[in-house]
Length: 149
Image 1 (tube, one colour):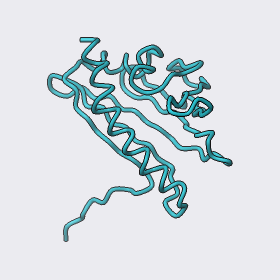
Image 2 (cartoon, one colour):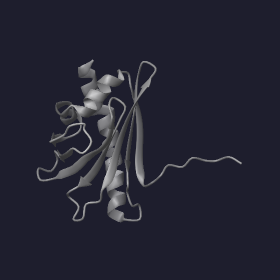
Image 3 (cartoon, rainbow, N blue to C red):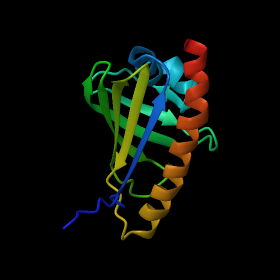
Image 4 (cartoon, rainbow, N blue to C red):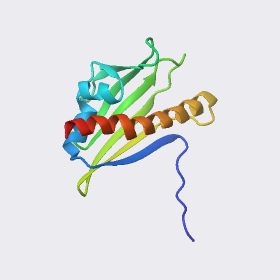
């Protein structure tokens, strides 16, 4: 009997290889000025457990994502809570980053979890976020990493 692995539809899991040292990728994830260049402007962000911060959605001047750093292992992993304040009752999703040295570069794994796929709004948000994460990880983050090298 073979076991087939099936993706979990209640989460987004994306992995990407960057031909850069893990320290460089970690800087892009944890330095506010760099984070703003590829993700969103942040207010109050530091990569320390318990830090509450806001991300500003550039396409909507009044839209914010309320986050908290839940866990961090310097240069290896970081986990945030993620509450999109555009929802009337914002769900609390989890965004986890893992940084793995791999050959002559780094594999970055992003997991965005906690979506209720039986909820139409969650499912729509999950699909839109997956497209957005794919885009920023493959273009904007690459440009920042290239500038740091």
